[in-house]
Structures are given as structure tokens and as C-alpha cells.
Length: 321
Image (cartoon, rainbow, N blue to C red; front, top):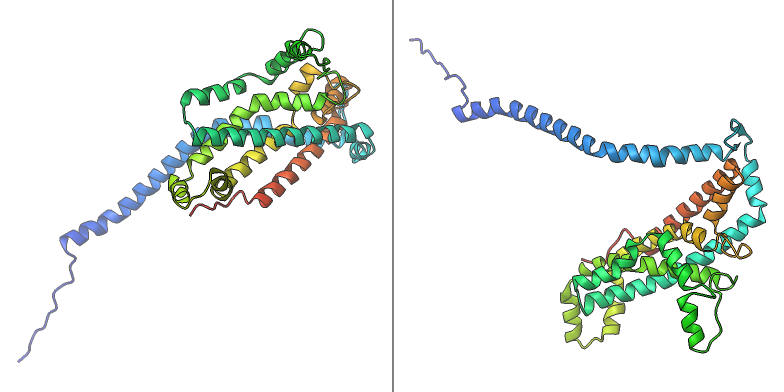
């Protein structure tokens, strides 16, 4: 007797078949959605990317090229190799300008950082009034040119209200912007007055990220406000403070407009900061090649300082758990 054995055909459940047929369509849909998101992202990025290329990348590359040429706008650029850099190294005015700039940066960063940190801590520990934050930010809403002109009138040796008050108190009038000793510290303090509110609000935002539980626990342990500042506030604020320092140092090295409207580099080149010297070389003496070489040197200096600051301050790390 012959026994016919037949095995039932292998069949997928109805649900499994539906899933098997639906997976490829899901993948295609995901790919299509990703492509659509990519196009949308590129559309939003395009204006900023265009601005970056036109106003930053291309001028930078053009400036690097011009630093190896002799160019005065009237004749085609003439390739001179490293001549502009050799001239820069041997130029005493360049080194004097760099020294003046460093002096300005040290005063500006030192005073601005301490003052901004004090204001931020007071805003965070004593009051968080939006009106006070607006008052602190008010000077930053004024342009550097306007701030420079206002303080030029206030500190005028003969007619300024600042010197009128000093004279009324029985002291001698001080030529704040006309004396070699006072000029750079005065310009630095003018810019501190304008920028300290903005810097303070950046630090205030960093303080807001520190949990209040840490302060409460420290108070329970009997810690004073001063001790909490050094043991809690400063370590946890370090990444934000590091970024703020990097931003303010870069901005300080680029000081120009305050000098241009107050002292024009005087007296006796006492305020001839590097940016003003570059401007004078380019648009005053039409030495665009040499001005470009100094600009490239400033770019290298700022890049080195930024990298050094980033590593020393460990800006990319936080002590918050």
C-alpha cells in the first residue's frame, strides 16, 4: 500500500504578509521624508551660508592673497611674496600698535569681566527683576560711535561735565583723552561701560543653569556667601565664563570705532591700536597689501589666543553632573 505524504505549503499569516509588504514602502517613505527634510534644511541654511561666503570667507581668502602683493586700488596687484611680512616684522609702529592694543585688551577684559561677574551674581542672588536687567543692558543698545562721542563731550578738559565736577571738588582738571597716560585706560573704560551689561547678562544666563539645591545644601552646612561663590558658583560657571572670555578678547582686539571718534590714534600714537593702524595703512596711504599682511597677522594671533584660552579654561567641559 502506498502512502501519499504531502506537507502543507508554507504560508505566512495574513498579518505577517501585510507587514512584509509594508516594510519596503515604509523605508521608501522614510528616505523620501529625509530627503525632504534635507532640502528644507538647506533652504533655511542657504541665506546664512551665502552671507558667510560673500562677507567672510571670500574677503578672508582675498585678504590672504593680497597680503603677498603690492596693491593700491589704482594698479593691478603685483606679487611680492613675503615682502609685506618682512616689512611688518621690521616696522616699529606695528609693534607699538600691537603693544597699545594688548594694553587696552588687558584693561578692558580685566575690569569688564570682574564688573560683569559681580553684576550677574547680584542679579541672580538678590533680585531677578526684568526691569533691572533692562537697565543694565541699556548702554549696550547704543552704538560704539555714539558712546564714544557722548563720553568725548563728558570728559572734555574745558567744557565737559565730568571735568566740571572734578574742578568743583577742588581737583585739577584731567585731560582724559588728550594725555598719553590717561588715553588708553579711558577708552577701555568707555567700552567697559558700554559692554559690561551684555556680558553680565550672558553670565547671568549661565548662573541660571546652576541648581539651587547646591546653594541650599551649602547653607545648611553653614557656608557663607563668599565660600559658596568660590566653591559652587565659579566652578560651575567656568564653561560659560570661558566662552564669554573668548568672545570679549576677540572683540577687544578689534577695537576701532571708539578710537576713531575720540582720539584718532593720538596723542602721539598713544591710542594707535592695531585696527586703526591697519585702517590708516589701507585707506589713508592706500597700502592695501601691507594692511592685508597685518590683518592676516592679527587673524593668526587671535586664532592662537582662542585655542589657548579654550584649552586652558576647559571650555568644552562642565562640572555639572
